[in-house]
Length: 510
Image 1 (cartoon, helix red, strand yellow):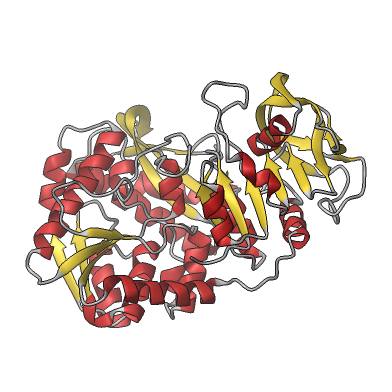
Image 2 (cartoon, rainbow, N blue to C red; image 1 turned 180 degrees about the horizontal axis):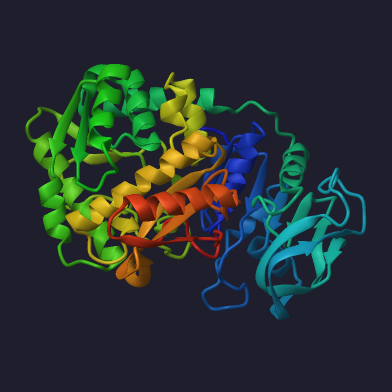
């Protein structure tokens, strides 16, 4: 069992994995475990510190999530974040109660005492709050280290025990000195910066060789960043045991199937098996408008197609997927997180399938995947391509998916990407796409009344996909996109721009 520098106990926050990710950025190996993991398991990993994440429950409620009480006696530093803060207070003899005023969003921190945890943090800097409960009194031996307008005990701790607690979330980008705080905690734990994507790649390659042995792995690729990196990782680990399959589901962007085949065969030198299953997918999506049903139909159909292909090969035991932690956490498969949406890669395989899943990217984020891709020798064009969802354009069409509606969306999407690339904005943004809405709008073209489709442009800035803000594109660029889409795509007479951030919205519309 590998030792962890810091263990993060997951109490169900949507941001839990971000804590580990921020620590890994500091070169500190952090690992996530369920909140109710046994102390015996924790001891076996010999951590230098423990972080208790946030979560949706209340410590005084019947459904409260409690960790093993023995962690308080392990004689290692502990940091509680949000729910973890309240749990630390509750378990050390203090009180937690519903807050008179719920607090979500930005707040200013007022540092009251110099301490190791807040070293280098500017007084009055912005932190990100997300809580409806509050600590009403401190445990014995603890002292308040900082407050905010609505949080008397914004930061408190017991420096002799090296126990610290934060009401806010240092792991999200909105907290200005969050990385500094987590780095300070790592120093308090005595951690050194030794972990990076090179060491991750080496570890995963060795693990894949051990796991696979003489069996065969069927790897599904779409041409996106995630599946390309998975294929490259497997090609490095088990080149003779790898079968790479590309399925054209009819939900790809313009000319994408051809581009995928050229990339894998010509640029990566992978022996690619290409399957055109577009009619099968579109047939099963006929009449379906509910986004959850779309995702599940697409996921189940993918599995059937891969299973049929696997039966043509001997000793196929595993199916490899490019599942990321954002997929897992939003599908509520990790810890106590609440479901946001189902992801076609998440939730395991149906009982009738005979092979097991391999998901080497399951514990890392998109930006880490890109670093891994470069480490494995993939080109920057492949690695820095904008994310594209597994369900494809099906979840960018509101309502039923048809060939005609797919064609409208493809034409609009090509124009958006062309304009972003020619203006230099493509590489400045995280993700950009069009959404075909399920409403028509009135317009006027050539003195004639029109009643046609509306398209929404969605462009966001992000570093990991867990949080995102809409991109502040220049008005002339947006105008060019709108003008070209309306003029060049027959059937669209209105273009709007999405200015919502994540949270509360998601990046994709479905």
